[in-house]
Image (cartoon, rainbow, N blue to C red; front, side, top):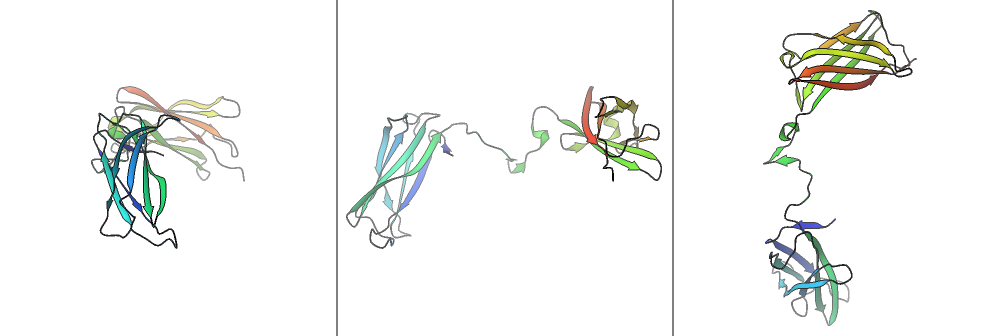
Length: 231
């Protein structure tokens, strides 16, 4: 994957020279030379050239840099840096860096100003529900519990009106029960619940639960498959 740089930015790069006999770190016969090319298919174009400088902290290391002037480098164009050097009379040429000029790079953002992003950082709100199904054999009933979310925040009862649920049989597309109103478990929590005692699910079958509520002035809908294995 190409690294991205903006126009009017600095690009830095380094090379390490090795002795052709034995491979030990070695100073070059003279400072290596670099060439920057714009990659235009089979006909690359030279953009600029320059000499690299010896790095006093490491034998055989040479550093180079250049400036991506907007008059020389074009946005959305690909570039390659070549370095040529000679050690103990033996010359070599190799590519050391490839990059793309992109003034607005494509990135996957996980933080904004040091803080992790969440649904609240985007234009439209996202609404979804957590649906929990329990088969209560002791009390001979199916228990459905739903709580709604706006982005990453659970909603309180004051944010939700007309909570309802329809359960479909997935083997026939008929309803087990339809538009059943749900009850709030408290005035503080947004959790809604329904205990079904007549139209019970069968073990070994899958059912589609469709929860709906009016939130922020619009009808919201969420679906989830439920069921228990037949043991």
